[in-house]
Image 1 (tube, rainbow, N blue to C red):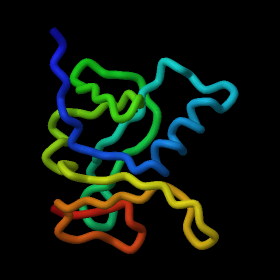
Image 2: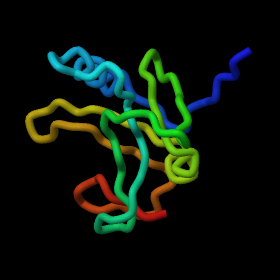
Image 3: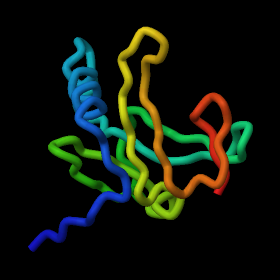
Image 4: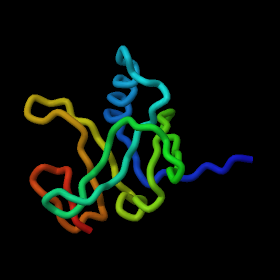
Length: 114
């Protein structure tokens, strides 16, 4: 019996729609997963990772409304409760991260401190 692990991250309807649209682009490698994570750097200390990538040995896999998402287990403490949205407006277009664990963020919205 498989156990479903609750994803520490959620994707809004807009984010899900954009990810699914990107997966249907010509030449997309269907073996790739959506990777969510963090890396050191950025003006506030940590930066968000979001992109398509191969699964690695130490990744956990989550299913978020039909989208297979991979993430390093250690990243969960930084991303627990985070919501990823996609904005498609005239002034702002792209993925937006809403992280309740961030003690501070920078103006670019892709860097944070805990």
